[in-house]
Length: 179
Image (cartoon, rainbow, N blue to C red; front, top):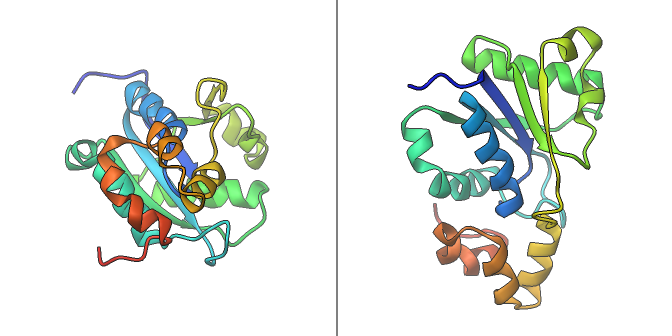
């Protein structure tokens, strides 16, 4: 394995559904780190969280199957049941540590987010942040869900990975399918 700048990267998101902007974050981590912990946050299903955790993982796995097979990418479910503060940051780090037996040394996230405020000073000193400008892929999962409901398949196909085009009908139906 080629030595990357960082040993263990971390990307956090709901990925409901995963789109090209999410993939940019994941790809930057994969290109910068030997391994990537992909924390898929989940909570109760509602209009902002229409897909099951299992279905979200299924979609991500279709796109990143080679990295998962090579153990360069590990998908980790993360129950989002506490406020977005330092306890949340501690829970993120502890979750990654429980799987990899080490803390991440890099986190990749969109520049519009302020996830660094979730980490106390000691953790921040040992966690390099890669903030990715959203201008290239100024897209949200809400935009994708709205396009699915409005049958705007051109928009959907322009913003999701071709590896999951076969999931478009399931995405329209909030992921209901046997996986």
